[in-house]
Length: 111
Length: 113
Image (cartoon, rainbow over all chains, first blue to last red; front, side, top):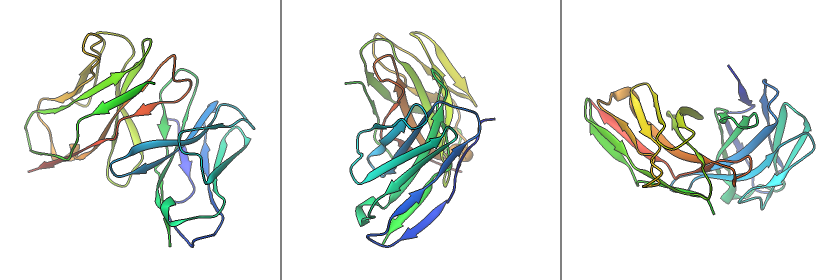
């Protein structure tokens, strides 16, 4: 089975900190995605990447950046964390023309 | 643009009750349709999918039929169990969505004994 691993299940960070969320997949998938999940809003796409060093903005990229230096790893970066970025963050990967495999999620709290 | 609308929750049912969660979509072209499930504290898992009109996806007793005429993909289960308590997401992916999926807002289901 494809595995998508997010490095932390729970994180607590202070306002203004730079935060790194890591995601690794083990099946050589081309496409990787970062979503945030909030009650009543469902999943919203932050950024995605369809190849190494390639990135595309999703629906809510403001306040975030990403890095994909290797095919298996896709990092989400909060340049200066704010309280409105408190959320559940979900990473997903997929090969071309197939469904997503999601990680278990990282619940981030910014205080 | 392409989008998915699913019924508001939360939904609370007694064990062995019949479940329907409505999902309708808007898309140009012919998207693939999916249902994902999220159990407490976990990420999303694919529950079932259908890739063309009149296809029926099924898994773990859940079913959904791709209805092009009504642009719907309603999730059904004949007899729910306590272990089905989760949040259910309808999603689409198609020729006009690039590589990404569009998700509904999720419907929370609680099944009580």
